[in-house]
Length: 96
Image (tube, rainbow, N blue to C red; front, side):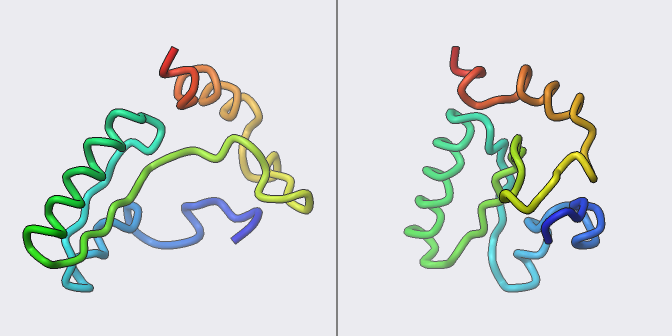
C-alpha cells in the first residue's frame, strides 16, 4: 500500500517463504545485482523446464523514488536512507 512501510504490509520475511504453501519452489535474489538476477532467472527457468513446475522468484530491490505523484515517501523513509542506497546499491552504479 502506498505510504505504508513494508513491515506493516505483511508479516514475515518477504514472500519467498510463502511459495512452499502454494506447492512451489522459491528463490530469493538481490534484485539490484544484474549478474545475480541473470543467474537466478536462468536457474529458475531450468528448474521450471526440468521439473515442469512453477517457481517463485523474489527479487529484493529498493524503490528510490515515490510510488506516484500522490505519494510522499519521506513520510515513512528517511531521505538519508534513500541517499545511502542510491550511492551503494543502485543497480547502474554497481555496474560501473
